[in-house]
Amino acid sequence: MQPTVSREELVTMWVEYKATASEELRNRLMEIYFPLVRYNSERIAAKLPDEVDTQDLVSAGVFGLVDAIESFDLERGVKFETYCAARIRGAILDELRAMDWVPRLVRSRAHRLDHATRSLLAQNGQMPTVDDLQRHLKLPQDDFERLVRDSKAITQVSLSRRQFETDSSREVREIDVLVDRRGTDPMEEAQKRDIRDLMTRGLTRAERLILILYYYEQMTMKEIGMTLDLSESRVSQMHSAILERLKAQLTLKPLEIEEFAA
Image 1: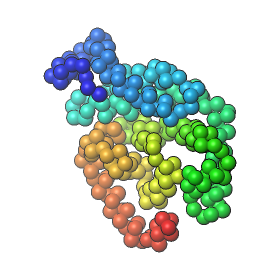
Image 2: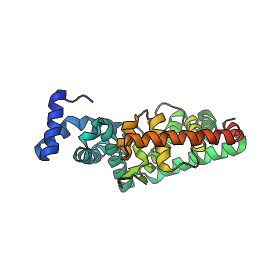
Image 3: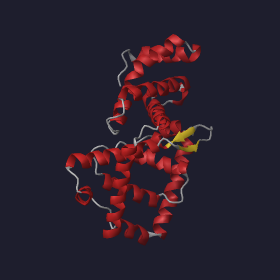
């Protein structure tokens, strides 16, 4: 997102807003950063059934933008776009959950896909491919793709649940670390998640989030600290400690991992 003002003007605007809490300046910042709301709303809408109105998501995302502008700390040295995205997505997902928008038919489709996956896994001893599932369900390509899309949509909304509290008592939700998986094999991603869960077994939720944000979201230590309300040095210390524990776990349980990955 490129602001419609120069960088110097934008910095001046931020400094003045934080000093005065001017409603006029806040509204101007909202105009500048509104494309972030549109962008995140459209990304989420692309994973949801057609019944969901994108404009409803935009309206919810605006509240997240306002919250981000009002709470953003200039001294933390993190780009506002990085800080704001999680607040916007969280506000949108909170609204979806409050509306309980998922129709009964959509839930039924998701349960059908889950049942087929579990059935084939039990029969063959390995995670089924997309082609395996489509053959098992005997669905045309378009119907099967909708089934997968609806299943992902329900999973996405469930990620807005509270995950943990930071050391400043600010809640962080799983949607804050949601990874965009469009265009990938959902079964392959499920296998990756299972392996990741095995590797991070025994870690706290905060420790798991550090790994996810660093290795999956490609965030810097400073950005992770900003997201989790921790200092950059604290994040670095925790990251080093986590790696040492994982190395010990790998040494003690190589056979379990080999069997799992086979």
